[in-house]
Image (cartoon, rainbow over all chains, first blue to last red; front, side, top):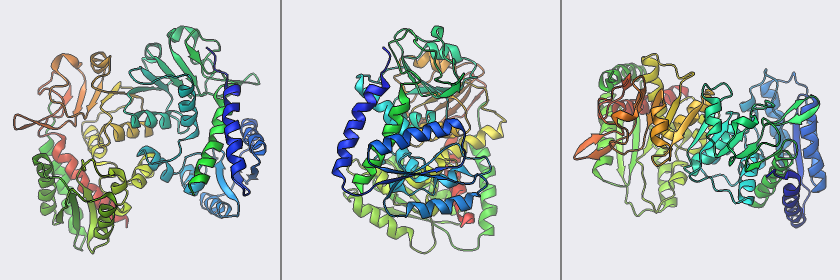
Length: 271
Length: 271
């Protein structure tokens, strides 16, 4: 079964619209952007489009990539405190000259809808956070939607990135669910992938997972996303013969963006 | 090779004594204890003994187990702010009636030598902490001492506990090192343990790992600790035929306590 990300995301968006209608004030989402390559612009456009759809003002602040860590952190602090600012997103990756975590730590906890500041991640790690990182929330929603239990399954995660592999591993650990994390160059890569009942991948390497590497009854969650020959591709070849697969494009992409806004409303209602 | 925990820990303690001599003021460590079973008392005594050895005042506060979460958190806040208080340890586990994490979150960051508050763990998660959880620090010190690199090794962790499995998994993830986490009832338990080049266990179940389950060239780090027939036992049978094993008792026990004090000095020197 191929997951229909668009259809499922639309149901989430309908719920967000109801939440929006209940909140009477103006809502502003600030997006900080330092680079301007085409991938980042397309990710940003998806956020802008959904914001508009939800009657949320989306302000993109294009900042000179030559800015210093301290300067950017100060800017973030000032922007967070402007009226109506309810969410803050920093488009990653930042230029290598900057200390990314120091900058992310400048986001107010009440506006950290991406769940990337040390404070918010500490709460997530200890199970005290009221929101989940968007990728984790998306995985949770989809698995609940298809009634997939992670218990007693062999779970394999590929990649330890800060946006996908690492937070998903913590989410599993918090539920006392064992798992295996692989790197694409792990020596037993193929063998371990083949043993997975649930495969979660977020590397960004098209064609990393091919037909022969996946069990027939495997559930495949593909968070990989890279541009190849002008089209978006996931880590997995399309139409794998397995029980369930999230495609790229049309899988997690729009859902993860919707989960960012779901977090915004959760934090907003908590205040 | 069987690791000599006592001998190695003595070298660490010598270094701590030098650090102590350089710090002129009085230092107090507060230990909060709610239960009084014999295991907890023995763990506490080890801390008291080393404190004395390092000319640190160790104050054990035995608190009525019927106290409420809010009341205990307030008490911790008050105690942390008394003069000379430089470290705060809460003996775990707390009674089930209490919200453990809420209480741990009451520890001041500058005194959280066990690295258990959400704030400290958030910094640890994002690689911004200047200390490591004591178990992680101990593992790091021992592996450095025997020149063991974790790169390109099959690393298996047994147990996802907050004191051992979970922080070690984050430490590995922060170094982009892949690993597998198992529960003792994982279906492929024996098979995966047997494939490990590096085995890290922290379950607390004597005899969980027997001779036939471990590769001859495996490095075994045993953080398990439970009382069986009046003696302390680890998760592994003693004298496994493998490259390296940390015994219980006489392995990590005293070293982890020393790492707690190492953290105290690191935080003290940072202020």
